[in-house]
Image (cartoon, rainbow, N blue to C red; front, side, top):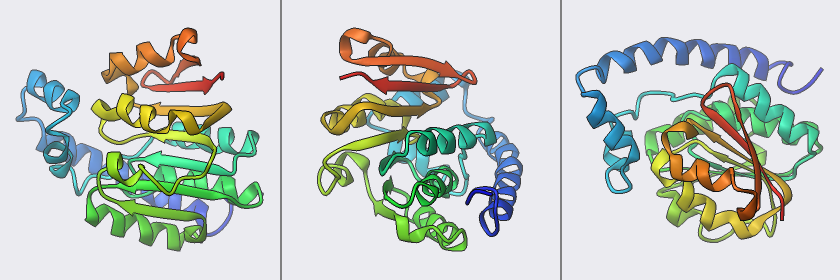
Length: 221
């Protein structure tokens, strides 16, 4: 048995994914009045993301079950010790990554979220899952919260916040990525500049899509 498939985490994840599935329908309805072109513009904006994601403060914006398993498998298989996550939301992806750290014998996960109500929810879920001791939640804009106090090397980086900021967050942390480190970006298909960067071996990455909207990259240098 693993932490992810045992009590209390297994039943907690089942509940959180069920709630996320129910909430996703409500979220789609709430945003149906925004024209597709405007929605695409807001997602790509580097200046309006706080307002846009503020509208979604009650939405879990969770990774899929498949992506959650992928995160656990990558972190567990690579025996990672230091993880950074951009975009905590309710902490579903955080739980998968922290479970891998537990099964690897320990480590540190730094995650950042600018919406304070989501920080509260994520902390509650991490406590319920028995994993809060492995996680540091930083509240605020990632471009500020991830500027200092990081481990010397990062083994895995998850990008799951404002999609427009993926290149900026990667630049902020790139020098700390060890050779062989994984970078996983959810909904990366909405940021072609990010994809062009990580799909370039000249820029030091090997990359492949997973499940249509997730990009899994490895740092080569």
